[in-house]
Image (tube, rainbow, N blue to C red; front, side, top):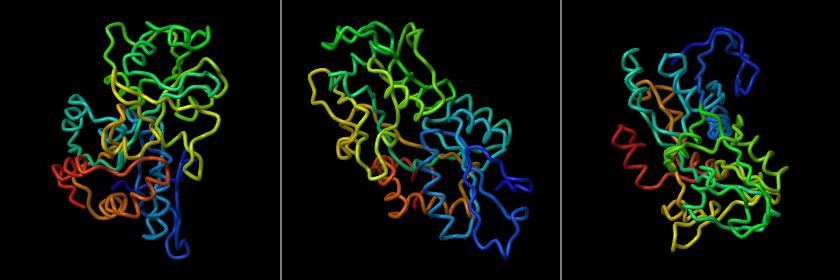
Length: 301
């Protein structure tokens, strides 16, 4: 575990101090976690609950999956949150630095394509989504909507969500050139809320309110493969069973199998209490398939 002896950063940061009368801020071990914007609020909630129980200090920061993985590869953090798998090149870089990345899947996410609720289109096929992303479909009237030019809001290249969408939808010419790259899921939601012709993609956990109900001022598209039933990202059973067409695991990467406080935290995340916190944040508990993948990496909690 990295030991932080300096002052705490005041950016997007979680730092919890328990029993401060017995241990000073400057001398305590701190678990440092950085990476995925999608996982930031979720892991913050998990870290808060865990720290209250275990008297362990945890820092959580966002900035994107690629940023977190780069820091882990260079031995600068304890845990990288990532909404995508590490690449072969990243594994090679890590090994060259004496880092042995071990992955754990802590939750499931559904990628939602969101629009303004006044758009009047409630579902899209995966092929239609691909054509929107590539720019082949440029106007909502081509999909039965009003004569409005489609404006696409997405993430930047540090984002695991961007990488997921890029790999899920294979383009010969890449994304449409006028797509707006934003820094966070929240920024995409705000952009779409303000744009009746906009469409964006975000993790499903970001389109639910604090009570776990869908946001009233955003529409999440039902998605379907041609000729199949359409499913909503709000339908937990469809996500967990793999019927919703855009699901993905959410990862944490460690340097070697986690030990000590890191192992305690990971066990907590995968416990019934931790998985309930995941549900409460609008994400989904891991399926039996992802549990079996965890076991391959020695994560048997």
